[in-house]
Length: 490
Image (cartoon, rainbow, N blue to C red; front, side, top):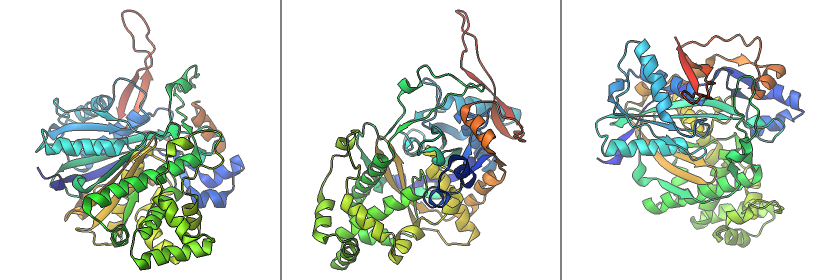
């Protein structure tokens, strides 16, 4: 089976309704709203008191099945990409069990008993790895069937930390099959990169030891992270993954990047993908034609940097792992490049080559926060809906996607838009998933963030999963302590 004939036929999302406006958050926290708005976005969502990563994932899968009229008996692969799982044994089988329960309630067939149920974990890249696993399944022993991959996460940060305004929660489910209706996923011409980075962004279990659970018995999954170092890791891994793709396809980097109309990248907050794509463009200029290098030299002149010094820096191969020490004064592996980047960001060329290519669906993303594994598929879903609304012609167009996971790894994968993309897009319902929102005041936000019960939320679940109860038996003959029991509210 040619991998290029397999891809994505549908997308569906679940976004929790509980919303925090970042302008309000700035007033509560004493942060500067214009800067937060420019760098991060407008608002973010948080999980509710009876929600977990599994309730969101299962709800997104149910929406996918219903919106695309999927025959569950054809689904032979159900993958879960997440870094927020709260069970160190079971994974996607939890989601399958929940979905089967709801399907029975609706009088429908259950997901096939012979379905594979893997969970994929690598920070924010888990969903992309899940998608690649599903595509390989469909190309081999799962040929002729269908696969579902759901990306679901809860991004929580300690109050007062630099990561707090980038929080988010949600899930996006993908339908994958042969002769896809939305996009063909070109794994053959994709690029990969990985390198161990020690302390970029981690979740060691030791940090949870002795943690006291709140009234809702929710574990607070705050990461250990280093923001400036993480930016360097993101940029470096992006460069390496792109180079891998360039070499596979024998591409001229500058010519290729300019040929693209749309790029989707992992998006922890607004500024990060812009920075990653812009630095990639500057590196491409250094390897381009004389006129390309002349363009790069013009930015150097304005930055007060010798072009030859910049070219020399771009040829270095810094060991990013060596930056992982508390004694470092700066975490920038390419300081001259970043200085030139700040000049480039002020140019008209920056809007044409960077901002415009990242524009499709980007406005919706300002109101989501970081969804970790779900951030990239959410942006893609929003982008397709905007393209349909604006009557854009995408058929046959190559879209470049970049998934990234801290720790670190990156995947650059071309998508080729299918002929029937408009019909597939009409069933996504991403904007509909974001329509209803419950705006939180400071007291409600603090309570939800702390795992305490919240009053006056004014939200009744409908057509979604909730946690009905949490087990507490810890006896020799029966144990279910900490196990969540779920209910589908129709």
